Image (cartoon, rainbow, N blue to C red; front, side, top):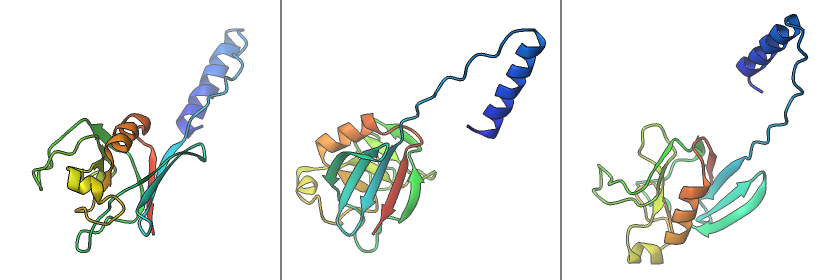
Length: 150
């Protein structure tokens, strides 16, 4: 529980107690943790929920000169099918993972690109197959953790 939430809970309890009302029993909040881990050396993404595998798929990440950044990121926002302002290509099921909006997941743009899943051929984004892109777009939530590593 965050500091602000704890403070608000304490204030509510004090107010209720001063009014002669018993504080309500705490309710267990179940937060589902959905994460994606991209393994660059294997060109796969592992999706997990609460530490358990939910999906595993081939990806295409950045080619030499356009490397996909390593690190821990989070889903910033999702867009159904924007067009890249830099490369002028549609990016179906866009899931942005950096605040600048330059790196994210999206469906591979064409049949030739779909056949190359498993190879590092993108401009830095994480390309997914059509079914996986649609599924990830619905499954990942804003704020979901995304880790990219070797």
